[in-house]
Amino acid sequence: MAKLFSWLAAITMLMFLISGAGVYGMSYLAITHAKEESATAVAKAVAATLSAQIDLLNKTIDKIVDDPEVLAVITNANPAQLSATATKLERYFPEVLKIRLFVPGVSPTDDQLVPKMGFADIEMVRETFTKNRLPSIQGEQGVDRHLAITRPIKPNNEVIGVILVSLHYDFFSKNIHTAATKDEYIELKQDLLALSVSGSKINTDKAANVRVKVPNAEEWEVIYYYVAGMDLTDMTVSATIVLVSGLITLLFFFSIHRKLSGLITQDVNCVMKAIKDMMTTQKLHSTYPVNLAEMDGVIPTLAQFKRVLDQDNDDNIPDNYDDVHLDNFFDD
Image (tube, rainbow, N blue to C red; front, side, top):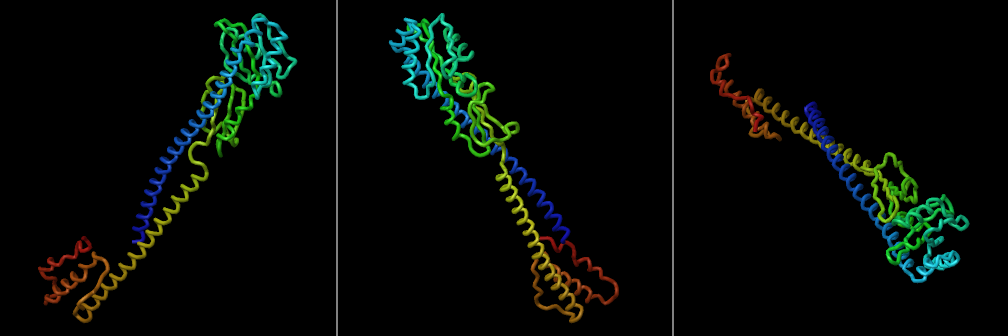
């Protein structure tokens, strides 16, 4: 019986582990999908917030270029007035570094003030005379790096000038510093240039990621890195549940084995007592209580067999011995 129970316990544990592995796999996929959706939602929210800030700056600059004073200065094209008016406009932007005004036919050159105008700024100004340019981070790393926004000045749909606004580019970093949590890492990039980061540094080569473009900006992209699937805590909890459940199952099998072994031992002793009584006293007591229902038919069958033997006066087994059925008395 011990061998039978061992096989039953092994098969049960195998099925239990297979079921546990299946549940673990489904949980892994569900957690992975949930993390992906969460990362996508956060990345989209960050991108939308940045886009809204850029849009607000654009609208503010659009109001400035429609100002009659600005239009008059651009029309006069006096360099001194252009510089003075640009300096006056800087008071309207708390995050501004420098504002510059340009008219057609004048090459924008300015490397004396901070931030300096680099080739990228010059190219933005030139292109803005013919088409709209999206805001972009320009300049070398350090004091000259800035967020550059250019807007055409065109009172009658004819471009008569361009305004270049250079702003501190770190003001939007606040939007992503609180977005990332444990085992998550957010990057804001312009092409290959990292503009801002947030969260705990993880192995981005192995981590899953979600990429969302930022509208109203030049090649800005929010990249949200996260650890897919279950983390160490989730795996530990899952493994603990499986192991504890398996140990409880084995303990249950062990308890049932001991209990059943005890019951069978008691029933065998009762049957042996009945056999002893038949062989010594030639009679049976009124009751021989057994625990298992499958054992109820054993003692009556033995008693019937004894009566058949008692009626036989010869040494041969009588013809009516076939009436004594010993088979299947363990069946329900």
